[in-house]
Image (cartoon, rainbow, N blue to C red; front, top):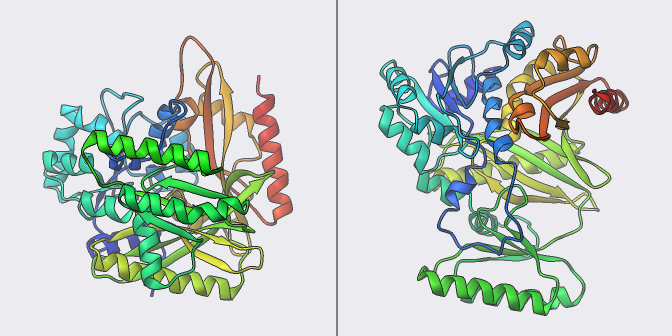
Length: 452
């Protein structure tokens, strides 16, 4: 019989027992670390928003259980913690770094904190193991410096299986349908891919080139015509020649028509066993991505195809040395056919952090939307004010209707004393129908926008 709690199932997969204790790190956008030293596409502007992204570490609060530990960049709002406790959620022990730098991940903060290193070393002596959003050299360093065993594969394996080059080649090897495209690891292979893409571009079809470790829409360029392709190829070739590092990692592929985007998750155990966890549908309004809808609106046959694909991919990943959570992006074409593999993310995904509360608070026959609400602020906003502002709209029990806030740190992460700043309020919105979901969503949006 299946363990009813996702986190306990995860522990069984990672460690062979559901009763182990883990220390969680929410090092979001670990891809940025994996991509260091890799050849990149030209960047048009500097990236911003690191402070908010790095404070997404608070999501780990709702993945860890009562016997676990979480390392965070900042102490959670105490009223927010009380709200979660009132919902009956068993929270982990929280450890906060001494000196949080908004530009650093929580792992980098922990490595710079001698007291935190001692705390984690003490946990290691008690048998606590380390788990992370994704494993890079920084997480390996933290494990080694604290003596804490890492409940994950090595960093090199994690980087390899998260490459878009790996995704395309794995799908090719397994004979899985994917958009026309090519994986490129040398300048000559990139030149050949561009040459093969030229007729598609000439026909007016949209073709893109993507960095193998790009994340959150970064590291992607549209091949709009011959001149654009020649210019990009020349810039990459010059970059490679100057560096003396001939290997690169890009994917060139057609941007195909679709009816819906999907994200599904499965877990690969240390012994190679594969368990399909769930599939969710990306929710958009006016072409803008608003979150993930659950359950996904798919036929039994479509779900069965994704389950079969997950098991085949899982066996491939296990054979290549990976175990842990795997999220896969997929698409439904306009004729309801599937592209079952667009990209493999062999790490925690946003959906991973919703799994435990989804199992507990989304009842049979209910629908839910995991999303965030942007907020523009001129001062720190305490959770007590948000709770009052959204009175009657916050979820208060399993099977009820309303918003379950699953990350509050991102609201104030960008705080600046001298100017306004942007924050995000993340939550899982639960309702009995799509109509009710839209009504509550609109009400929350209106109240947040009308906030004085």
